[in-house]
Image 1 (cartoon, rainbow, N blue to C red):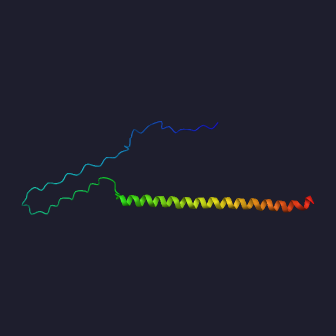
Image 2: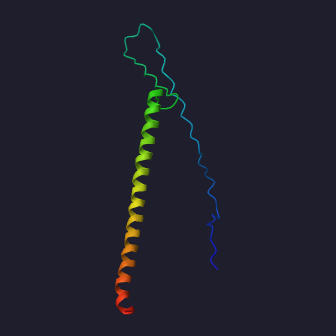
Image 3: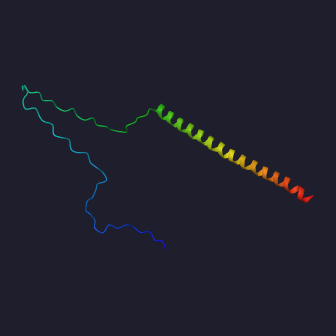
Length: 111
């Protein structure tokens, strides 16, 4: 019947893309040739090295984030429960109305 078809590359290209890229080697810094030179050589500033995560939180910050997350979960949960309760109440009231209307419409026939 229905069979999935898996695409197959008949002629692989042979080009492999690495999953992990390495940082390029730093460019060699030009050494100044004489201490008493009149030329205006400037050495480039070293690039800042980032170590560790970009965002650091203090213990108070962690507690604030956890507290905020808990508050969001509680608010979203309350909203969802109230919507479910509204749907249940609406369904029950429609069912009661249907029973009342049915009893009102069936009474004259039985008499």
